[in-house]
Structure formats: C-alpha cells, structure tokens
Length: 235
Image (cartoon, rainbow, N blue to C red; front, side):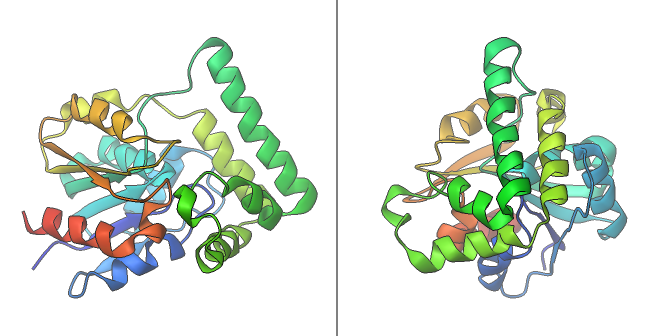
C-alpha cells in the first residue's frame, strides 16, 4: 500500500484541480490542502505540514509545486517522494524580465478586484490549456468556476507569494527521494524544458510529458496524470 498522498493546488485553484486525478487513483489515500489567506509560500507550506500525516508522498501543481519544495525545505524527513507538475524553481528574475512578470501578475489582480475572480479566470485560462481544448466548454467552465471560488483578496495574497518566491535550487539539489517532474507537452507557462532543467539538479528525478495537455494538465488529462503518479507511487 502506498503512502498517503498530499496534493497541493496551484494559483487560484482548489480541490477541483486534483479531483479527476484522485478519482483515477483508487486505493490511494489523498488529501488536498487549502492555503486560506496565506500570502507566502513559507506560510502555505506550514499549513500543509500542520494538516498532513506524519509521513506522506507529496504532489504539487503549478504554484503548488513551489509549495511542495518549501514543504521539503521545512520538513524533509516527513516527505517520502515528491511529484512536481507544471511548475518552476527559479525566483523572480532581476531587471526588466522580473518587472514584466510583476506587471502581468498585478494586472490580473487589478482585474479580479475590479470585475471579480471569474472575470480574471476567463482571461487567464486562455493559453493555459492545450490550444485544441480552448473551445471545450465543460473544461473551460470548470476551471473558471474553480477560480471563482477564490476571493480577490485570496488571489492577491497568492500573487504576492509568487512574486516573493524563494529560489528552490538548493531543495532540488538536496533531494534524496524519488522525484517525478511532469508537464504538459504544450505548457507554454511552465514548459517541459524547465522540468528538464530541474532534473539536472534533482538526482533521482524522472521527467514525463503529458501529451496534448497545457498548464492545467491535471484537469485536461487526469487519467494520464494519474497513470504516471500511480507508477511513481509504486516505484
């Protein structure tokens, strides 16, 4: 029997981002963490550790991948293996590149504050799924409905956490547990090449591409993601 699996959602996401994946993992005990109003990755990791079992496998999607690395930074002995999906590890870039990222993120915060998180999500989701699925109403509306459950204040807090994210390179370099690095084949935000770069630091990492998926791979291709997670849990 595998270890309990703690699942960490990404930016403005909740249990729904993992729902299809968990359903395709029969027999695996899963737990999805809610970060509440936390405004730093460190605080989010502390919440996860307070709610998680004493020892557990850990999977994080997008911002949740960064939270997962912070969990390991804070309590490495409690995590038996880690899966990092559609994520990154670098801090905010210096100079113009960092300024562009902050400006783009703050524009979404301002939209959420002005028009609501559903309106923000409707704009954000374009380009975050595989191009062929952008007209798939059920998928798009499920993503928007999920993000609409976050308040503008919660969304702003998570954006603050991402802007001030730490460099997770030391965490990757220090990993001594099985590590799965997974991204959608068409993830333009956290591309597969970024995960291949992460694998250069993580000694026991395996890189997997989810075909025909973008940044929201756990919702776009839940069965394919679950298949890879099941193999990782059983290894």
